Image (tube, rainbow, N blue to C red; front, side):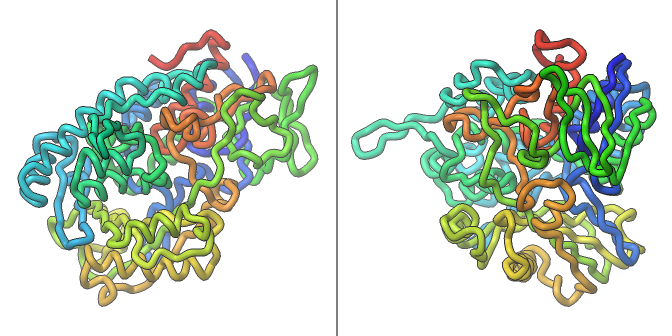
Length: 497
């Protein structure tokens, strides 16, 4: 039985902790804040409750696997999962609207044809077939296996089978997501639908590789899910599973460094001056959070830099949620170039997107409201990391204005609103500027890969969104599985099955 110190109580770190405890190890989690979940938090006020992190759950099989492997109770015995149907309603810049059914290619094709015109659905359906091929090529190396030692193969090879495109007497293939939209989808609304998935993860579609096509495919193939009571309930269930497996937690326990002895990790140093000895250390923290964690060695994947953050606006509304309301509505910006420049351009850190793309979440969940005469609504948008208070205030107002396109009586019903800014994200996760990590993607020269879960210091491993396989709830869960496999089975571990 090994002693294992886990730094941070984020979702990936807790997933690894539960698996390691089941394998017979003594696991202690040290969390500098007073609660668990990392970015998966909740705000409660006046009888309203809101998720302040992710609001929907893709690929729940990752968490089902965790509960299956760590105890007798399945995930569904610990939380109530429901499919979100329609998966999303989209409001485009020209006023066109479409509601896309959950996990139904035929239904999506029919809906797009009806809303956008004949042929639109088939173009999107054909794109999904190609996206599936990219998913099949990258699923194991980017989600289920430790990062390959020869990772440059993933960096150089574009797995998306782009359609040949003739341009100026030359035949080209799309290399970026924006080119996929322009050359293969050929409709600004379909392009907005495609690019919206990248934007939600903080990716610039103009430079994101075509392999980012797996992001809408993942949602299409495995559905969009909601946890009754909010996604925070998933964090609670994972925390309680850890406790049931005798994982120990220390809250308000800030780790200031990793103890090294005889050339390997041997424990952690705490802010109160104590040292907790351990045989292995798992760091579930952002790059730079611990000054003596060694950077990747020469030739290894460096940490991602320059990623944006997320602004969340919580709306308490008088009046009941109307019957038939979509759980999720994406209001697309009428100024795509302006939004992308505000986020990814040279002046993005202080710029304000006058009309941002906004996701409006309106769960049909009585647990989130004081009574049936009220509604809890959450708005989210991608914003620059370290955005100033004034920039966040401006964007909050712009987000509420954009949301009125989906909810016309919003301001008349508004009781109060609160915002969760990049500074709040930084406080919850420790990520500089509140940056939010993106999922690992192939191609693009490795710019969207993440450092391996093993490090240059033997005995030290990393879990969570800032290490392989990257950000997002499914990826965080898999990072925990990979770290547990590497510790339990050693360097010969070849991945989850």
